[in-house]
Image 1 (tube, rainbow, N blue to C red):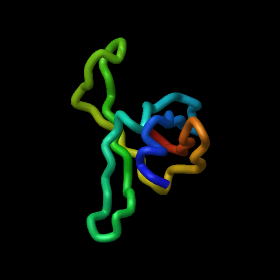
Image 2: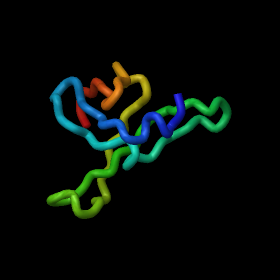
Image 3: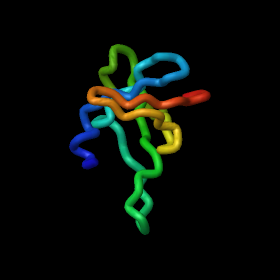
Image 4: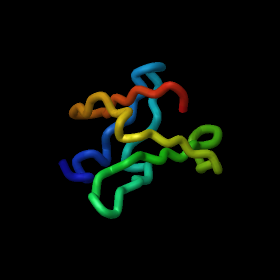
Length: 79
């Protein structure tokens, strides 16, 4: 699967049912040696989603439970 295929999918938390963001708005942490994705870094937005704050959430690749047509389901304990 290519990053372009993932880029417009929404990230949904299985635990809370909340929307975490759109994958295209995140940064990826990639292992330089293997090329595997290690985690997503999601910026937190201030009121009304107008600008990014200094706070980020990190989702490890291991937390992904399902990649569907429109969304990616992740299971987190706390974000």
